[in-house]
Image (cartoon, rainbow, N blue to C red; front, side, top):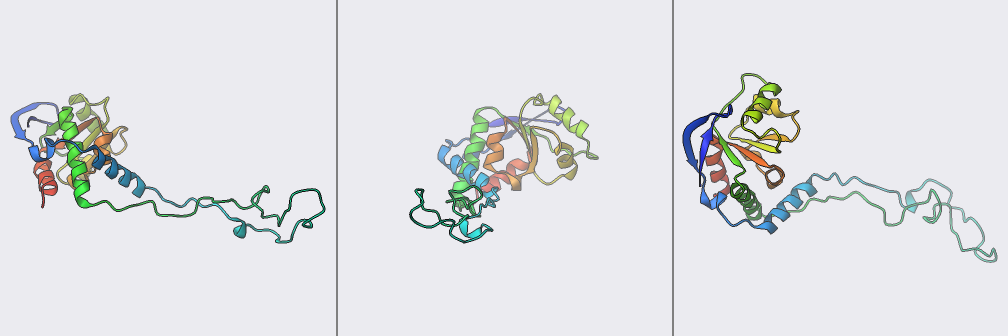
Length: 210
């Protein structure tokens, strides 16, 4: 698959690059994408929700009334879950939501996500660039020049360029990452992928490794 290389100003460079069919041309695996996205979102959960059980409630342990002869239901102490302010039955407890996913499944998921974007013509290759200083206005001008200002965009750089990262940090519906940070969730969450030219070979090296 060949794509034209454009400058971040929107001008055509007249060059084309070839995207690996082993990554961008595979038949996407929906289940691998599901598992990887589920894993990413699960790993982000803090798992700190906690409610007190009756043993943890502060209060008297004295029996409220005698067992029989009152005409009402039996009752223990004030910490009974049936009473207001009592402990909670089967409430949430701190837990770890993360789960392990095999590396091959993660690689397949990222390949599948990239293949979907390639099929939808949602990948644009940018000539390597950098900003002289962090400028949000310059970042917005780039999105406008590339006609993607109204879309969710994912900018993938070959290496970390702090000026670009800082320029796009406060802009809604856009995210800047490096190839080493590439993940299935960000790919599927974006409408348009802006891929730096130097990142193409790096992606191939990462996802085609044996």
